[in-house]
Image (cartoon, rainbow, N blue to C red; front, side, top):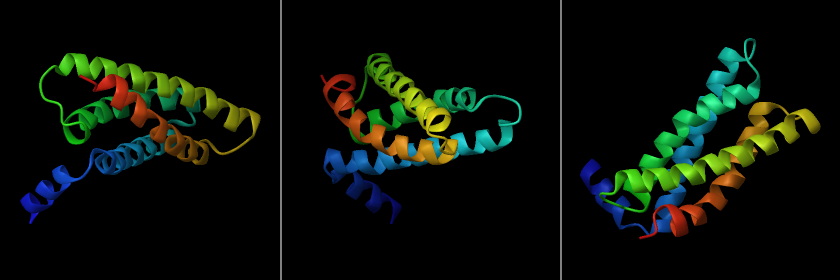
Length: 135
C-alpha cells in the first residue's frame, strides 16, 4: 500500500507535488514556530523564536523540495544553496511583515505567522521553479 502511494505521488504533476510538500513544509514550520514560541515566549522575543524555527524549517524545506517536488538528483550543494537563498529571502520578508502585523496591527504572532506562511509559500514556488532548481 505504501509503495503504491509513493509511486502515485511521484507521478503527480510538479505543481500538485509542490502543494502537497509545500503544505507539509508550511505546517511543519508553523507548528515548530508555535511550539518554540509557547516554550520560549517568556525568555526571548517572538522574532528570535521565528529565526530559530526558520533555521530548522528552511533545511527541511530545501531537502523536501529537491527530492520530492523538483526531483533533482546530484548537485546537492548547488541546489541547496540556491534554495537556501530563496528561503532566507522569504524569511526576511516574512519577518518584516510579521513585525508589522504584530507590533503595528496588534495581531497575535501565531495567527499572523499562519497567514503569512500561506501567502509566502505560494510566491516561493516560482522562485524555486525558475531559480533554485532550474537546470
